[in-house]
Image (cartoon, rainbow, N blue to C red; front, side, top):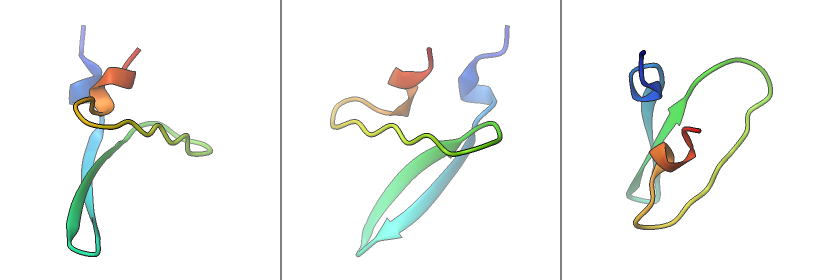
Length: 46
């Protein structure tokens, strides 16, 4: 089975010199999940 890691689009944006990584997947209204160090987006995969 294909893992979500392989299905997302990895993107970056800049916030006043800080590079921020985010991923996108799917259609419709966006849902934003925010986590802090040491977690990352993959923690929300289920």
